[in-house]
Structure formats: C-alpha cells, structure tokens
Length: 334
Image (cartoon, rainbow, N blue to C red; front, side, top):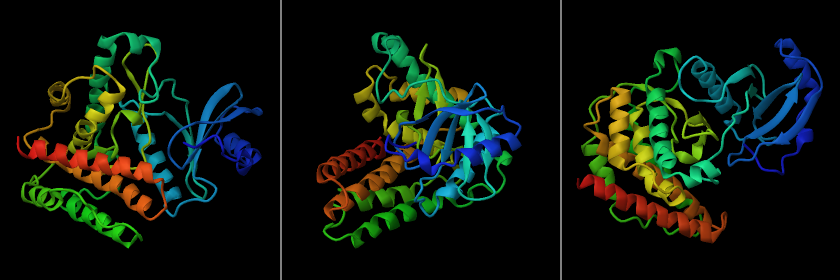
C-alpha cells in the first residue's frame, strides 16, 4: 500500500501491458489508474484492463534492501492460499524472476474496521461481536494450511528458541541512536527470563501471518465476514499460536476502535474449536506477543529521541509499550 503521493509515472504501463499479454490476460487499454491508500511502503495501484479490475503491488521506486524478496514471498504465499479456504487477496499473476518484482491480484471488496465502520456494522452490536469471531475463524483457517505446500519457506526449526534473543538484540540496537537513554521498561528482564524459562518444548509448525490484528483485515460490507487478510510481509512457517497471541495482545487497542468485540475467552474458545491446536501454553504466546510488539514500538520512541520521528508519536508508542508489558504481567500471573 502507499500514499496519494505515489509517482504513477514510475510504473511502465506499456511494459506492464506487454507482460499481461504474455500471461494471457484480457487485452485492452489500461484505464482508471488510482493509488490504493494504506500504511506500508510498498506501492499498490488499482486499474482495469479489458474490463477486468486489478490491483498491482510492487516495491517503492527507492526500494528497501529486502523489498523485492518480500514481494516474492508474498506472491508465493498468495498462490498457495488461492486454493484454500483462507480469506486472502486472490493472486492473478506474478513477475518474480527479475526486479522490480510485482504481482497482480483481484481487488478486495471490503473495508478496514480500524478506519471506520459502514452503517450496518456501526448500528448492530451483534455484527460487531461476530466480526471478532470471524477474525478468529479466519486465523484458524490459516493455521490449518499444510506448511508442506511451502517447502523451504521460513525456518521452523528453533523458531521459538530464537524469539527472545532476536528481540532483545533488536532492542539493544536502539542504543546506537543518539539521544535515546535506553529502554525504561519495567520488568523487561523478568519478562524475558520468564519467556525463556517457560518456553513450550515443542509446537506444530504452520503458516503464520506474523502481524495478525484487525488493522490487517478487510471485512465484507454486507456482514461480519472477513473478506481478506492483507499485508503478508511478515508471513513465515513458524508457530501459528503466536498469531493467536498477537490477536489477543492487540485486543484492548482493537476494542477502543470497535465497541462490542468478543471477550478473550470467546476468542480462545472459538480458535480452540476450529484449529484443533492444544492451547495449554497460550499464556506464553500472549506474553511473547506483548514482548515482541512492545519492543517493535519502542523503536519508534528511540527514533523520536534521536529526532528521526515525531516526539509525540514516540511518546505515545512508548506508553503503548509500557501498557503491553503490563498486560504481559497479567498473563504471567494467571
């Protein structure tokens, strides 16, 4: 996704037309070109050709080091999910052999609930309640996908063992930013120690989204159904229960935006019934999600201290980090 400031002249539409012809897609003039609004640094543009609507996703003009590889991975995942019951954008075709990598998908007809609710959803508390359960159902469907369909994708071996060291290293790296005094996060060390001490001994590998919360879901306009899970940049083969932990960890923030979502207990019961996964160690996954997300958000605070991000945003996200670590404590003490 991108902003309205995208330079559409950076896209060679003549070359795109030739490539689409080679894919056997409907011919015609490219029309109705418009940027798709969103929050990531990748470019998304909507257009039609031969009477068929498409969305193009590609890296920004000044690509990040891993931008093209991320899109290769996304295209590979969407190709697999196309033949499953997971609600995801439907891949049409992908160009992954040379850079810039890009792919075409069908437009998703839906809305993001963190931006605003249509009248049906805004007025009916039963619909809003069901939205949370539909989000859980979609997550369970993703966890049921056979990871064998994505050989060599991710590193499930040692996945849980890598988590705490990986994010402590990330946090330590913020110390290189000038003006950042270091992480003032109560019980940081205790939380890390608890996670290492109580880490599940084994897990059943599965396809993970990696950033599963309501901001990365599109819902149908005519009801509570999830139209598509979007933003697959963090997808990997790992432990799907971390996605569930992420959904629960972000639930308080989601509730501030959408009144009437299901309780934690309802979400957990729904996932348990649909996933077939053992949830004995669920507290570990919620705490791990709070730990990881808190450290990610602390990065913006560190950059704000260094003058690389707005200070008010940095302060706000630092408080969110503190709230997440406090939330982690409630799960540790359960």
